[in-house]
Structures are given as C-alpha cells and as structure tokens.
Length: 45
Figure 1 (cartoon, rainbow, N blue to C red):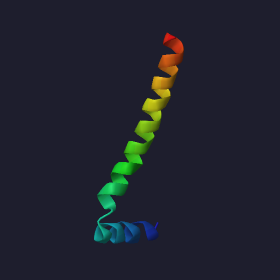
Figure 2: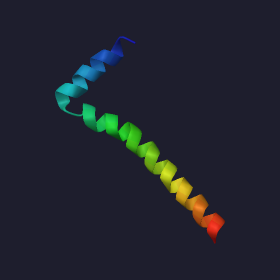
Figure 3: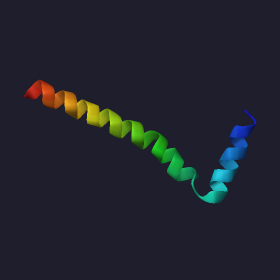
Figure 4: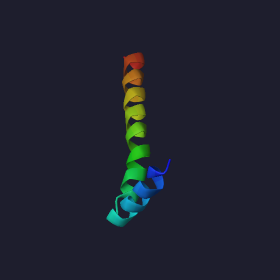
C-alpha cells in the first residue's frame, strides 16, 4: 500500500499518469466492444 502513492507521484512527474489512467479504462472498453461486435456479427449472419 505504501508503494502505490510513490508510484503515482513518480508517474505524475514523468507525465504518464493521465496516459496510464486512460489506458486502464480504454483497453478493456476496446476489448469489450470488439467482443460485442464479434458476437453481434455471429448472431446476425
């Protein structure tokens, strides 16, 4: 638990904090949308 704030401060200094926060949410969303599109195509065709 002590390492997390240190890592966050380090990431902010590096300027990667926003990128990593977005990638945490964007990547799973992309995977989910791809799976949904794939299932939708299978059901429609």
